[in-house]
Length: 326
Image (cartoon, rainbow, N blue to C red):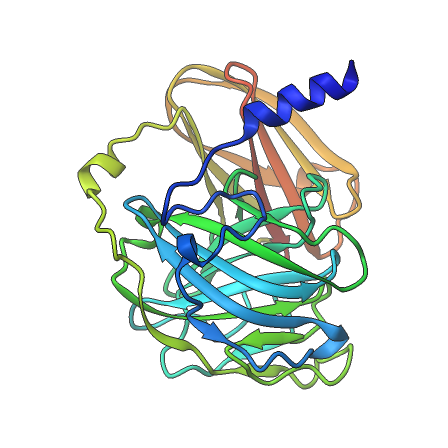
């Protein structure tokens, strides 16, 4: 009976691919869908045997799709850094021991953790440079990215993510680099595609890796978007991130709801421990929920914290990440 239920569940979850439209299931759909790789790296494993082998990018009317052939482990993380306009960030948006020295700095960074479908581990977000700092620490729905790295030792696999063109201001041509790093801010660049400077130690905090090698002039809009149609899609419950981020002691968590909703806010540390929970009712519109460490009975340490907003009316759950910096 359980096998039948699982079969029905997975059959219902399948979405089929048409030419040029990858399916976000963690399985490489082939070059008939993705096209030829935008860059093929040297194939030599880097630090911790990580290997960023090939970079793929394609698009349709709505999304830009980023993919990479890799060798990696579940505890590692990944990033595509993208330059589409003048200006950008000179440092890794997750505070890994990596700095950027490209001719023009990246302004977007789709990135996440490997996890092979493990919903307790899989995580991705679209970071963006807001003019003074990295922003966009908001978890994406797990329908928007996938990978096949499901074990804690290095194996061959694939990572893919899709980003709405609207979320990247409908770029035309861009420069892109993909890299693999670890799960600790002391970690540097394990391996990159195109190839670049790799870590030589587990602790690179005193000697950051410098990345400066894009694959340049990639067409990110081969299928032009209809901005009016894309922008008209109404979302019933949307997370807008939190500001400031990093914060101390308070930050405003911003979201919208299209109807009156009972919303629960949970804040969780990286060990999965619940440190704050509250519920409020909100009318339709855009709202800010103030979270302050001064309201807690515990003294939080500096670091990364996750938060969820759960809408009891629609069953939706939104996930974000914030950094407490004392």
